[in-house]
Length: 147
Ligand SMILES: Nc1ncnc2c1ncn2[C@@H]1O[C@H](COP(=O)(O)OP(=O)(O)O)[C@@H](O)[C@H]1O
Ligand SMILES: [Mg+2]
Image (tube, rainbow, N blue to C red; front, side, top):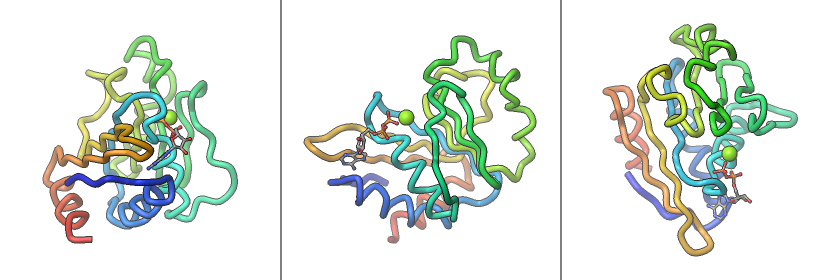
């Protein structure tokens, strides 16, 4: 499915609809250039899931974790093998939701995605496309298309 998100508020509204559809263990890749709005979408998703307080972008730490959710930003990852050092394996318990920015940097080590979300600047807004990578992802995309 695809959508035009005219403003940050529309991105947040989309995230609020997506949040309850993410089952435990869902793997989400977020792709798009710097400034596309990936972290904005993740922040709104975490808020919609009830995360309070500051949501920090893991630009330097590569990873920030929350109850039931882990957020990676792999922009600064130089080698996919480094993912072991930041505890990737510990989060792969089948219950933790993964939200991964710059997944292409972790190719070969990351689990495959249930959902790939692509964001692209379009005028003053963003084009959004969501693609399923598994039966679980297909269920989510089907439900997103209905709302
Ligand atoms: N749908 C949108 N329309 C317009 N601006 C947006 C939208 N979504 C996010 N932004 C803006 O884009 C900027 C960069 O967002 P960010 O989430 O940091 O990007 P990324 O994580 O992809 O590098 C922020 O200033 C944010 O307010
Ligand atoms: Mg970001």
